[in-house]
Image (cartoon, rainbow, N blue to C red; front, side, top):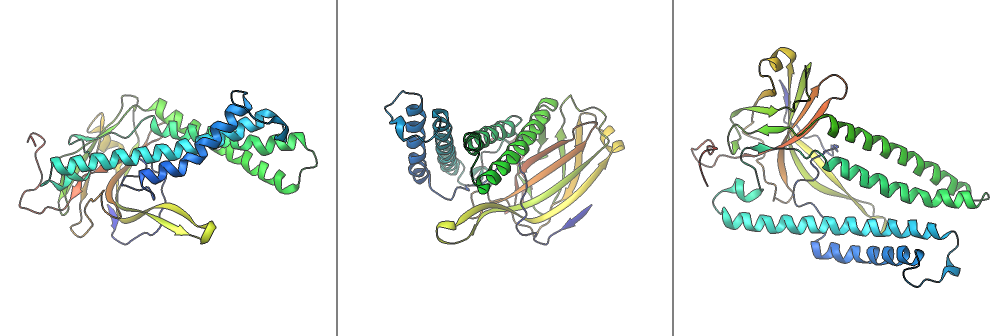
Length: 327
């Protein structure tokens, strides 16, 4: 096993589990107000282009369906912002209830854990990727339509249309790949050996594999402690924020075919949890969490999943709560 406790700053990862902590830069109310103009303009343009609401068609410089596309772009952008605000509001409400229900249990008050284990979402990555593909396709139709109607369009518009078309192709390829992954593999589950796990102890992690996985050749496991936060760049109107997953600790373990065959239907791996690493604090500012990434090499498309781990600091002499012990 190889490991490192050196920080790996600004390590961005394609994480199918999505942001984990309370990550939105605005409050739910602010996000609703921010998305309101997008939804309002989107509805007006879309319904107006369809003749449902009154709209002066003489002011539309182009075919009416182009206005429909623009309206859908605005509408989808606003709905995405509203969805983010709704999810954050639900998360905040859940955290408040958990803190009241488990005032003396930091692990249960930190996140709505399933004490048995963690199941990554099977179809959510496909849905997210498909929504992005539809949004980008509609947006790319605008410069393409203008070029089709006007042969004398400036070169900058032609270049933007080419770039948008390439992005559409890349988005389509990503969506197909995620769909293939979801169709080939059913849900997997990481089974927790105990709840919670504590820093400074050795843990054996077991992943229940779907029935579609046959004769895996090997597997790689990455245990990571991650800090999640936003980085602001630019100034004034050009300011932007991007979500960063900074790796604070990483350990790697490889399992060969013989080890996998020793436990049919499962992939097992053992890690030593470092005492000096940060504990899970999903509701922290910024959030800290542990994840296990598994890459299972099988014929054709490989299985790649991420799992959240409840790894906390042991504040007492107890080394975890038995799964049979009721709360």
